[in-house]
Image: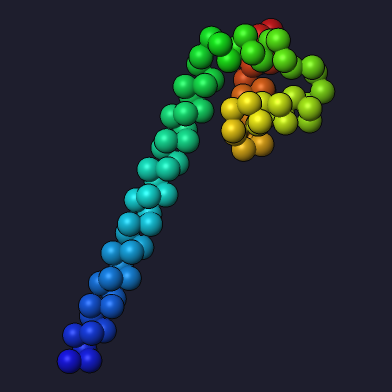
Amino acid sequence: MDNMVTIINILLILTLLYTCVLVWARSLRRKKAYFQKIKNDPATRKWLRDHLSGEELKDLKAVKERYFFSMMQAKQLVDDYYRNSK
């Protein structure tokens, strides 16, 4: 009887871990898709052109607040904008 409970507990733990990995992977894919959608949107280019000041920290904070990105994603977006606008 104790062996059966142990096996069931192990299976439940493995199922939980599997589910956590699936949720994490799906969340990551959704974040990447959202970032690409924002990055490729012409309205984003217009907003960046109108609101970037040239001060990196101020620009990153503005992008982060506008699009709800992490600082890393905001930096990627701003860097990509500057790279493609020249």
